[in-house]
Structures are given as structure tokens and as C-alpha cells.
Image (cartoon, rainbow, N blue to C red; front, side):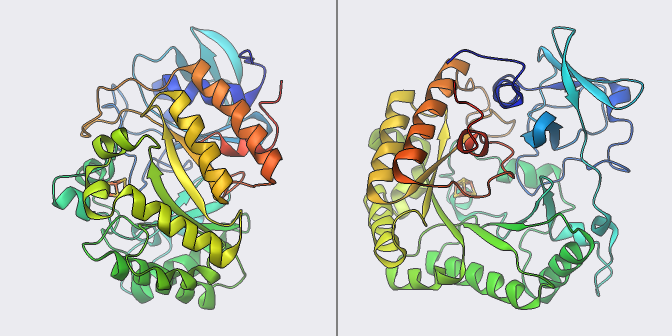
Length: 377
Ligand code: SF4
């Protein structure tokens, strides 16, 4: 497959790998009219140069949502034009882009007086994100996943609650869903507690509470550590898109890249949890998240097919080196590797009839665009 910069999905691939910068006038309205980068994680990429803030996402043509990996030396640049913005590559125009509008519910005050944005974050146009435990136990024991930016983000973004739970979280979600008709999914991320079963139960409890309170039904995606007690997996019956993140397929590299997950849970236990989930819910319901760029692409492709054969949908985020993480200096994956991976995932979706989670909402992954056929030759 050859790169085609007339295809917004290919432009997204390049932006995820090579990052993007902004002229100062392009971000003049960010934080007021347009949404500032404010997620509970992934706020720790390169230090801003000459800018106060940047958006967390760009909207490319044809509804393609792309996460912003800010790099001041990127050949890609967002510039302001008379109406709107355009994206350039080495000063040559490539396409128009849009900065997402700041959602009205960010200013909504909860019953304790805090803004709803302290509890939830807008995640693309169609989803709201909740990060349940920003103080992940893997960081506490000094064995974090080596690419993980959650602790570094905590250091720079104190406006988001470290552990949003309970009635105020539900209030914030109700405010978001009531005021934003385009929302169709909630994206729940767990972090890790010392007790995986406790973390698992807390997450499913929070989802159940939100589901009961929301003014209309939404789809729930949950990315969490699997429980030690596999009988708890039955609780995922109320979660449309459950995900466990193995991150890396190679057993040797899993141990290196995810030392905490290796030590406290183990790759074999992950595979047992996936098998138990498939036995309960059938093939195509559970998904396994990987991160492209942490292992050779052949190994990642092998892992995607192996999980698919087990009945699990493989999903792939694109690695970005973030400040404050052990992998801050590791290069991102190669464009050609991602193009090859896209072809394999498309073949896999077709062979098994799988649909990746949060289609249309993924900012740091190409899963949606691959599933929609945007990488077909
Ligand atoms: S489990 Fe790993 S990736 Fe997830 S928050 Fe903890 S250190 Fe980060």
C-alpha cells in the first residue's frame, strides 16, 4: 500500500507518527471556543514552544478524528486561514482541518461547585472519557508500562480529579449527555489498583450507576486490568465493549515493556482471562489492545492474528514518545509498518467479522479508519 495524502486516514497516520505543530494564531481560541488538551492522560508530550495551549484533537476531512501529538519540529503544521485552518506539510497545503468546539458542559457546575470537566473529558466528537485511577499502582511500585504517560500527565494537569467516583461523577456524566446530543459512547479507563478485583468491581459499579442515571442509552467501553477472580468476568455482561490491554504480543518484550503487568498478573493469566471472557460472551465481544511501535511489526501482526483466532478483537493504538515516560526518547513506529499493519487488520476484520471498539471515536488509533475501509488499496 502506498501513502496517499489525498486520503485523510493516511494523513492521520502521518500525524500520529510525525506529530504536528501550530502557529500561534491557529490556537488563539483554544481553551475558550475550542477544546484544550485536558485529558487525564496523554497530556505530557513535547513541551510547548511559544504556545499557551494546543487542542487535544484535530478533525480531518470526512469525519476522521486525529489525536494531537505535539512536536515543535514536525514538518506538519496547522495554520490559521481567513476562515478556519489548514494543515501544511513542509509549508505545502494538504487539507483543511477543524478544531473541535469546547463542549458546553465543561462549564457546568456540579452540586459541590466544581466544573464537570474535573470529572470527565471530551474524547473526540462522539465520546466522553473517564479515567478512574490516575494514581496507577504500577507507577507506585515503580514498574509502569514504559510508554505510559498517566503519571507525567498528573504532574501537569491537576484540574482533573485523580479518582472520579460516586455521585459527582454520575452528575458530571448526566450533564455531559444532557447537553451534547452528539455523544454516543462513554470511554472508561481503569488504571490499576493494588487489588485488581476491587478495581474491576469499582469500574463496573460506576458504569452501572451511570447507565441507570443517564437520560438516554450510550455504549460503554471499558479498558481495565482483568480480575484475579475470573468469576467476576460475568459482570461484563452490562458492558458493551470490554478491553484488556496486553500492549505487546512478544513474551520477552511484554516483560520489558510492562514490568508491573508481568510481575503482578502475567501474560499467561491475561490469556486465561481472555479465554474465559470468550467462553462467557462468545467471539468478537472482548478486545485486546496493543500499541504499535513497541515490538517488531511482524510480532505485532502475529499477535493480532493469534488473538483473533482466540475469539478476541485485536485493537492497536500508535505509540507516541511522551515527556516524563521511560520511553520518552524511543522513536515512533515507521509509516510503512503501519500501512502494512492496516492491511492485515482489514483482512482480519473481514475474515472474522470483527468490529473494533469505539468506531469513529478513536484519536490515537487507526482501527476505525481500517474498519471503514479507508486503507483499502
Ligand atoms: S496499567 Fe500501565 S498503561 Fe495502564 S495506567 Fe498503569 S502504567 Fe499506565
